[in-house]
Length: 414
Image (tube, rainbow, N blue to C red; front, side, top):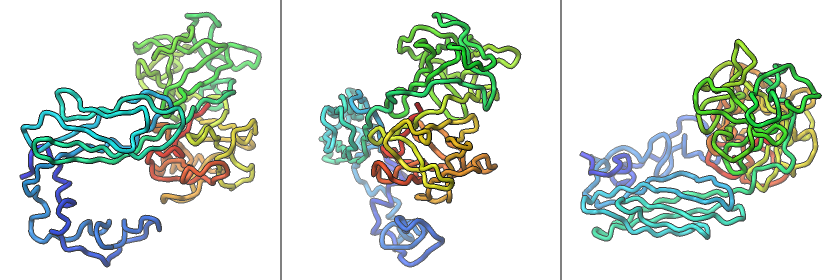
């Protein structure tokens, strides 16, 4: 029977000596840099785990008075932002009421302390203004038993993901559909849809991301903000920008614009031209924003390409080059002129190259990209992230990688 406040899945890893190691076997092919996933080797490997059991001792807690800290995973945040991160802790000892926390590798400005009335720890403070990646090791000691639990994770802080000149123009319902339109440029005016007209200031919108990984943004027209009430079916309006959650919109991919306050999506009513709030997933929610820069979490660089069909996608210094102007369509496709070419994957494995092609509307969805919670662009076919490998900066050819929250996997559409 497992000990109270432990994770039984940990036990074999604490008692590897109680397994017969299997070191010569393979069950397929895997990426060269993690061949352990399909080849036997000393210690842990994919085909055989830690080996075969030598008795049952490997599945026992063996009476250890252990402390366990739950890994929070990589934490992505904007440089200079306030941080509040709670770390969950477990202790086998029923007498423990708090733990003593220490940390190494915390960015300056952050500190850790125990949470009153709890075993948990809390990291708080303000990140430095300079973007960086920190590897943090947290230790929690039970003063009564002397047992110490540890966890190591990363805090990735990025520079601003805001473009100095964000794109502006028509917001259409799908490709070539009606345009999102403010009935007037005064506070409280209703938002509708209408035939697109290049002469109308009420149809010139900009999407401004929040500036930090995964932050919601705002939709503005002539300096006024798109607003939504919390109730389903409520009319969208424009109002004076006030940084409230009712004016914050998250790009979910596939054209969905979700209001942070209500959790509902901007929708065109099928029987009229009104724009209202409805549960996300409606067919009349596929909005296409103006083409603009896709900023990287690496030094404010941009997604770009050479202009040659089949060429590798690269991360580049942001310019006004049209080869850096991307549209994220209602089908999740990232398109760029000329010819509507798009971002596609060539291979399913980690490290496969990302190229510009013309076959993004395939049944597999290999050309469709979904927004992740930390600003990732996740391929709908492979579940892997659009990435600048190793965050190496300008000129680096992009690839798809497993999503780990690296700075090179963070993007923002402006």
